[in-house]
Length: 392
Image (cartoon, rainbow, N blue to C red; front, side, top):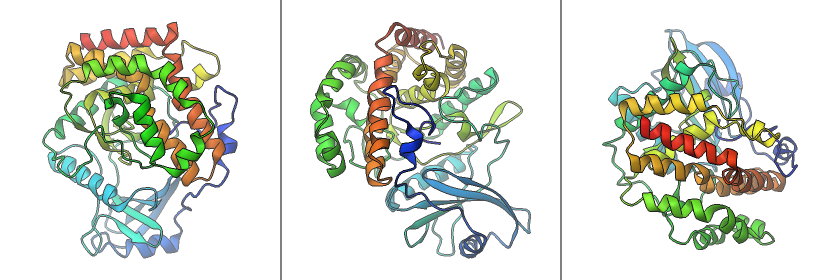
């Protein structure tokens, strides 16, 4: 899942669940007729023997099924206007690279034309082999910690393996960090590279008619200057020479399958993009250890320091973090979601027709989260994070 729980209350009092219901264009569950029609375009799959349970979310729908030969597959369905074809195919190349390297992620299946993306009107389909292991966190929302310390440590190790296997992946045809593409749904850190952050945000807003209208009556420059500039300046001090890297963007419990307390398979590649390793690690800490639901409900110390420690211990056991990277990690964590916050506002306006949901993204993601890191409780997180990363 690539966004917060739908029933998480905004710290300004807006209700995200009611906003999420207004105007959403979400794909409908896959019907039996539709399943048969789509799978018929994959000649290597064979006849469907058994249909599994549906998985329907805000942005996609899908289901597991088995074939007469014992094959297990997951069909994913999505409205194609959200993710341009070229972006999806680029992510498919990342997946294929990982599979060739032996990284445990479901391989993607080709259709009768030898393509990994099947289009039908306004709908996109992707057919994956079923993930290995147990989907024990499938009902978990974002910001829900692992149930076991061993899971957190293995998740850190798996993220390090993910980064390591992508060390030689070509970025020649990827959008380089710092260019801030104006597209809804992006997990990048482009704005963090800008020497003048308010000016970069203004350019990003101006590039989108939806954002331009939304922000026209909001004093956002004061918010950005007051909440982001100190952290942004600190991050830039440590970003000199940072190496661009393929990042997962949503490394969280419900995108990981487990077997014997070890990560057995990784899914959820919708936000794979290019940033840098410490950005991805910061996002993993945020999603799995900082309990924003409880913090928003008035519990400022709702943080799982044991999860942070184990995530970093697992990661550093395979890819050690330098002192500079540890400082960068602490500087990036409070502001890593700025690009995502703006893309969330845009997504809500363009694809959900929900101004209330857009306001929620602004209130919670763009303001409330970074504001917490100005408090003693937030500063404690950053201090612990830096020390844990440096200690490995």
